[in-house]
Length: 348
Image 1 (cartoon, rainbow, N blue to C red):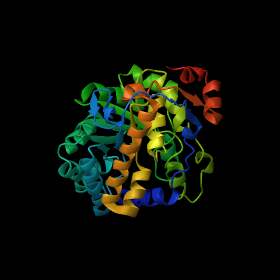
Image 2 (image 1 turned 90 degrees about the horizontal axis):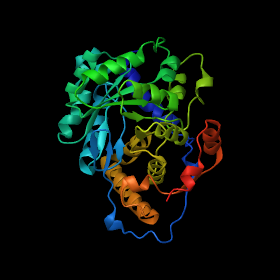
Image 3 (image 1 turned 45 degrees about the vertical axis):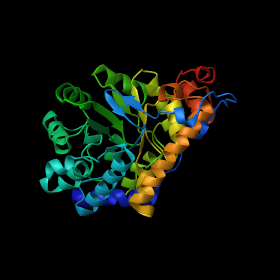
């Protein structure tokens, strides 16, 4: 099977398998504020992740590219959505274009459609410094995502089997490229220990990519003769992974099963600085087209302003300090990991 066909398969299987909503955010409840002392007009959605300044914490996370005209059409449409709504956008892994220059247009289209927007390049942890520079140049990118996808690769029939020295390569890229580097998981979550390792080599932004959204183990298992079903439930749920990352004082992007404005508000209240949507936005786009996805994002922005008003939080920084209660499996996970959840319920 060609790399291009595999990219198309990933899109189709992502739509087929959907999202499980096992991200743990349903375990989060807000402490209601009867006297919030604010107004919708006072709300600002501006946020910062590392050196990046964003008008909204919502962004279109890495999805596709490298699958010929089909993925070029998707990326062109998503770039138009990002342009019209003023949100950032990330591309799927650009390794396909680095190996076959004919695939470059499926990525370059994003910058062509959205010349002034915030665009994130994307490569795997196997990438070299030279490849990182090429990926950034291809998009005139504002940042580079380096994705970690060990479980996906192990489940993928033709995937990698050697993950040695990934941290060394990440450090080399961080030191060499002129833009911020975001290290992201692809749906299996990041532990506190992983974030500590990344911090030690100079990474300042992580996308925890928690369990509970598009499941790349399930997708790759659909492509296998002998399924590795034990990987289908493998990973750290998004809510728990956000808290694990926040413990290390690094800029956090929350992703993994994000579907609603409520999910975004809860993720930010747990400590995330931005929230990435992929599977949900892809589904809305496929069902309702470009205008439908633009309307979805605009409604999400309005809902976020309503909820922040109810919580008495006029900024993202204030939202990160509102009191909330952590229940259920997320509470159990964090308690077992030695993280005190009472600190969240007693914030003022």
